[in-house]
Length: 344
Image 1 (cartoon, one colour):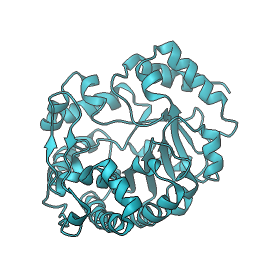
Image 2 (cartoon, one colour; image 1 turned 180 degrees about the vertical axis):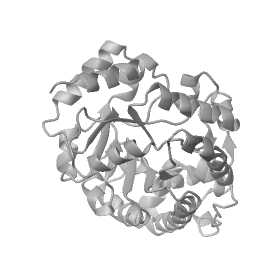
Image 3 (cartoon, one colour; image 1 turned 90 degrees about the vertical axis):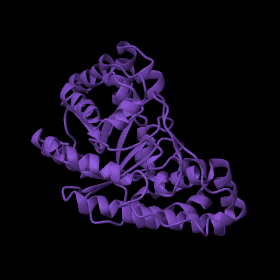
Image 4 (cartoon, one colour; image 1 turned 60 degrees about the vertical axis):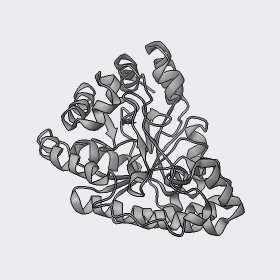
């Protein structure tokens, strides 16, 4: 992100209404490689292609805040790899991390990873370090420390069904696993901040918090997210595009001030659930409109979203989740053009 974009983001978070409303998209491996014209494996394994793909996005759409900006990642394999999870990397499909915990009894012996040396994490940071001079020469800076959230990582290390099962039947084991992962994540996030002094934001992604009820969220989500977001940064950004009605009311308490959700809950309702204390990044259907629709459908959905917002403070217009595969340039242009020309 440029200094101008960062300043705009902070103004929106502080409640200032900016006209036209800002537009932002989360972009990473599900969309960027194929949009640029390369395979996902090329994007992961060739630092030059990774950088060029990111530059094309910011150059083609300079008015868009692409978040977190120059995201160095290996899909869902990134953090689990530090715990020893085997990753499968098809040539042009999403990578997958294989579980390493076969029973709840394995949790106690799970090693504590070192983010400086373990798994794919050194490659994540070294890619950014090598690219940093070119990123900064183009007027951008590395702004966010990024990680998947603790419940998300637990679901990969153990399997989603198995993790949710022990949460209900062996809560002490689930708590021990989340506590271990949270300690690792604190170390990983702070190492990123040490490496790149311009970082002034934390970005966590965790959809598993959308699959649990309020009692489970209070026990297994709330205290750990509060601990992770208790850092000396200005922007505290959470992504959860699974159902969010349970967790949304807790976001101010957690410290979150920027939230990307799905599209099942209207932004007006989310404003009420969060007491209008959290900037909302959303929210038109990403797959059925942004990816599968034509520009006319995108325009109509964007206008409907704009017209639904009597209070346009703390809103950044986006899709309901990250940019999905298959979104075409003309659909992004339809979205941004509709926002720019909106007279309401």
